[in-house]
Image (cartoon, helix red, strand yellow):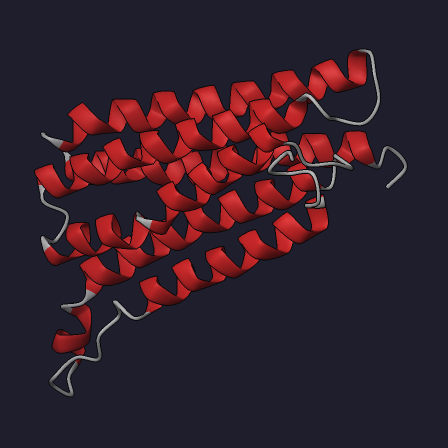
Length: 201
């Protein structure tokens, strides 16, 4: 029996939503209440806030693009099932790298390690996209455009994250800016795909 034979896109989507919700909850727990009642103590947590904001943005974009992908197909096969599990496994470790970076206050190595792991996450999302895009509804140019847009999005993210790795060793804040740039970049192809899905919207 095929591993994905009895699993519908809606069921796999619901399972994935639950895992992603837990990931975000774990990251929130990294936000510690300052010991002292002062603005200085609160501002001393800036590195934790920045790391959390960045990771929240990136996990949120994975969730939104994940939702979009699963609304484009009507069935799940074994390849889709396993690549989805791979994506969930990789992003489940984002809280670890978020905590590592915030604990070391965006040091060159911790920021480089975070950026390098984002390459891993983006690559796992690309594998899921390639598995799902084989089942896109519709044929012809529309399906090809959707596939091209998704591949370009993932390739651009991998390139920016990859660039952030060596940059972080010399300018950690410039590397963080590159990571935030990916967060903004991911929304552009998604909006374009949504317009293709709803041309009259």
